[in-house]
Image (cartoon, rainbow, N blue to C red; front, side, top):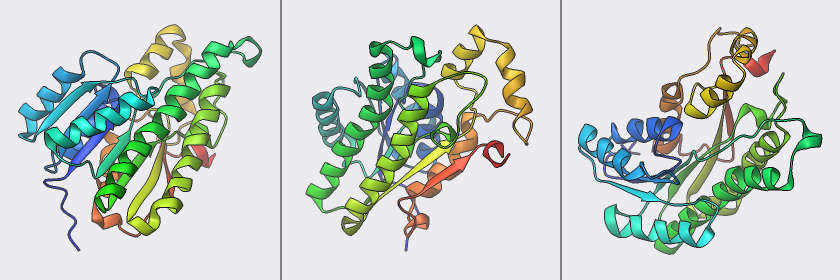
Length: 255
């Protein structure tokens, strides 16, 4: 069994920055060709940067992951440009905090549509391509420890519910596609210092110290703390690992 990733193609949603871009770099360092999908208009430049840094083929596409047809079209474009994707990382996500009694229908739908719907549409297009080609692959869905616990002191029922949905979506797809050799797992990070998290802390600076006080390792994660786990799940070294959610949170959920 080979564990090398060199020459494979990966799609990373939410890949223009943050966790998505960091994980794209980790895979590129292993010789994986990289396609970045993101709503941000900087996604093409991010893809070019990865190509220059690691010498792999890359492609950047501005895509709304809540648009099923656009996502399916993007996967077709990637296949023609740099090869059939056999690795998927779904890092696109948003969070809207607030008291549940004040959450609007628009806010609720936006979080669920991006975090859960967008993850499903990317996985759907990924799985369809592999099933059609008769190829195995590995999908890695970025969930959250918030899919297991309720974060405090901020309230984010929509985010928590969406990430719990991502975890069970991963298990559901893993069982459905197991016979085809398509593995699906999810990763549930704890607090990671990303642009999204920093935007929350900019509004409520006191949250940082409150969060860190609850983390046994005494720090928030950096996006790179997820890299080793993602490369392992993407490779054949984890060939018998599927339908699992792996929490990586510095010990937060153990308390």
